[in-house]
Length: 215
Image 1 (tube, rainbow, N blue to C red):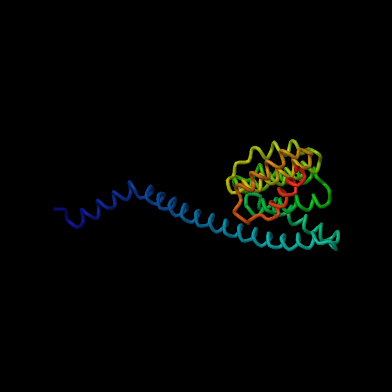
Image 2: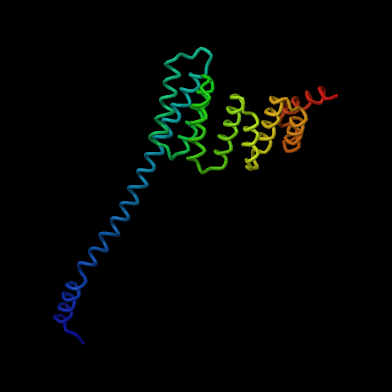
C-alpha cells in the first residue's frame, strides 16, 4: 500500500505529464460553451433588430401605398426595405421586405426593378411557400410587361399544394389576358374544384362570367 508521500509524488508526476493538456482541454471546452452562447445571443439580437425594422417597414409601406402618399414616404419605405435586405438578408424579414419593395416598384410602374427584387427573394430564400409567393408575384409583373405566356410557364413549375387554388386562378387571369377563353375557363374550373366550398366567391364569379360568354 502506498504511503501518503508516495501518493503525493505520484500525483505531482501525473500533473507534470498531463496538467497542460488537461488545462487546454478545459479551456477549449469553455471557449466552445461561451462561443455557442455568444453566437446564440448574437442571433437573438439580430432577429429582434430585424423584427423591429420589419414592423417599421410595414407601417412605412402602408403610408407609401396610400393614394395621398408623398415622395418622402415612398422613399422612406424603399430605404427601409433596402436596409433590411442589406443588413439582415438571411432572415425571412428581409425576404418579406423585398416583396414589399417589389410592390412599391410595381405601383411606380418600375417593372424591371420589381423583378430584380423578386428574383433576389427566389435566389435567397429556401422556403417553398416564400418561393411560391415570389413566383406568383413575378408572374403578375411579367404579364404586366406583356409576357403573359412566359408568366404561365413560370406558374406551371409551382407545386406547393397549399397554393394550388391561387395558382390555378392566376393562370385563368393570365389566359384571359391573352384572349384564350377556353384555357381560362379550364383553369378557373380547376381552381374551383380544389377550393373549399364557398371559400372563393370572386373565383366563382370569374367562372360564371365565362360561362355566360360561352353560352
